[in-house]
Image (cartoon, rainbow, N blue to C red; front, side, top):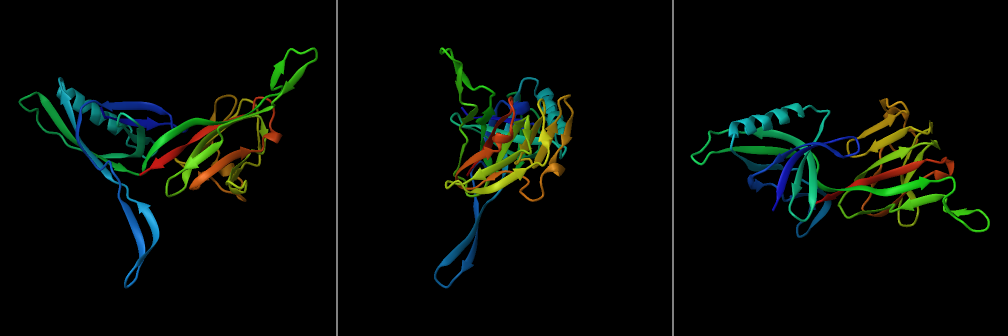
Length: 280
């Protein structure tokens, strides 16, 4: 059975608060519309650009038992998170795939309780992104001082670097954003996205050292970059991005890999992350 919820995402796209919409009927706008830019000819048109429209998703939220209390609680939750600095999303679970789209609740009607004790509210959610599936914690690049060790007659170790699932597969019509966290220590962190031939096409670099106990979060979807120091203080780190390169990490259509200058890293360094798999 399909389920809907309003959720709040943090700086790494994890859900930090939610409001479950228990009984939802008459959903509209869950599909997609593509807008075409064309050069019109006498016989054929030539498509020059394809853009997905952002819908206003509408459905009816039904409240049974303590209906007015539930309706007021929903309105207060929406009010709390409607400020621009919050990242609100609609969660849609069709029973097979859980997907999200960012946006805001832009309308919420209220009627009287009917003869069956139901209070129905028409809710409108305006999309600011397409629907996406969260590919979380699928990428891991790690450095260990010893790697794997075995009790032979002499000390032996191998595998200083650990790389897991650094492949990014983007089937969407446009670039998709990565969300990664880099843990120190590493000197001048330089992150590349490379194509299938190994050629870099997107690079983000910081001309400073990230020390042990510190981390940098690059959320290319929310267009935010943060650094957290070893004493837990979080600061905006976007001004520290090298102006010679890109600001955010966007994976183009097709297959890509992510890499970082782990030769400049010390024991304890780690990169973890994922991406938003946008879908029609």
